[in-house]
Length: 149
Image (tube, rainbow, N blue to C red; front, top):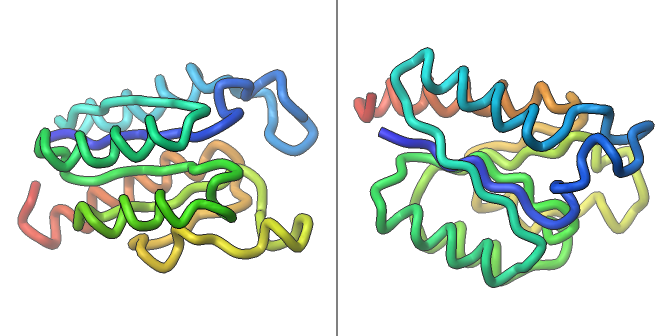
């Protein structure tokens, strides 16, 4: 059983990019913590980051075809613009938790709308990189309730 940790544009710059907004954790730090949390529960964790919309769409489709059970997804700026990513999430029928490090609802108005939220199980926003671990715990509980774990 595996989860997919999927990160979109500019998240490869975590720890360097605007640390006053996004903190000092790197993407490798986040991936290590999520992977450890999953492994402690006997769950595999696949990690993927891309700055390219099509690569993210392909990885969502591939996850469903591989039998991945759930996705933790920080779409970055594509959150607010990508109908194609929204449609990819909707098309696979997997539980998805959308994660944002900063609180998108208290930032610039263009960040308030998420294309992904309506087709996601839930959204975690503004809790820093801890939001990724909270997403793992929420997905594990859902999979347990659904008899998938």
